Length: 479
Image 1 (cartoon, one colour):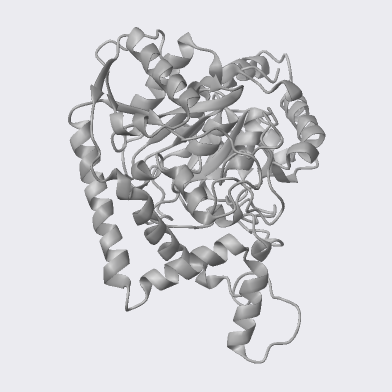
Image 2: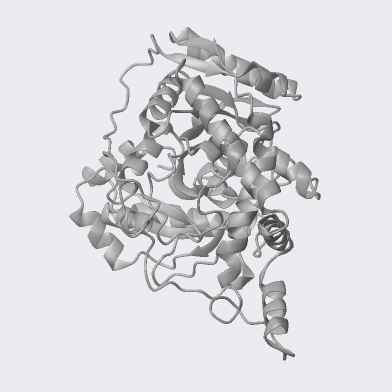
């Protein structure tokens, strides 16, 4: 049962081979059994709520009755939403995020909330206030971040699908490190209403599942214009048709030779080249392209994202929002200092300080404005590249999942996102799909599409997955 696709699960429900409650119980039992090992979840529903069952019975769509886990930065009515932080440890939203509401309306059944790096700041899921998440393929290794809880949960089949979010790679990198498929749609495609903000011009909700087909089915229910979100873009919704064959004849796939050369891990390089060969074998044409300003992306991102975080997290002062620290304060400033020091972890404090510094009057033009100009140049580079190709295929991560505690300095952790950040700055749709493993650990290939063209990356991935089975591999300990 746990190895069935969403379409196969829906057929089982439709034919009454299993009920919605029974299917949910299968996954709830796995959540209770394996979460003490993985720490992938921060909340598990004790039972299935009657309104979920009713929605599943009323809906006739392909997602009706399918269990789902939500990353713990999507507001869930009546269920704690912490964003992985002590600051929000006891926050129970009185409303649902738009994404949650849409998936509820589609009849999906909420099982749990996934652990994450605090306020989505991290690339390893070691920065959660509720403990680090472990990679199901090797419990001594990280699952990636910040959506590591979602990735680990899907990899271990605690649920067939999970929501996630991506600011600079937080869907693609953990998807690659855990061997699942994950998609970050175009910026503005999915509503951000009810999603706890990190960097408002970069955050985008997405989905992780076993296959591209599964991701596409859920994404079509998530996307659409939302009047409650000023960054939501009104655009025609597309419908998903899974490809019937694996032919990629006529598809021009862009590759970046410099990025391949930067892969020092020869096993990952070989896996990436093998995946590109598979695309060619199906009829695709590889075209060399260049992103001349991409080497500036990490530096620009770590000015822009912390600057926006500094503004977004200013509200969490322990008075208007967030937890208050114990003990008396000498004055208001002392109260703010104690509340924020107790509520925020070290990485969040580091990024707030960096962002505040970049926005200060003496450095605003030299750093923040310059980073914005670099962002524009990177966007133009992508436009030029997509005038030559239909889709780009590039690495996701320069390394396989690393061991817990081995990246204690922020800079080395930030470099883990060197291949994912450029497309994030440009707001483009991106997908990570599992390819040939390296040393028995998962590796991902990143597909990048033109703005608002999620179909091309989903179709390319789905066709690749018709002729390979890497996406179906499961860690043995969780079979």
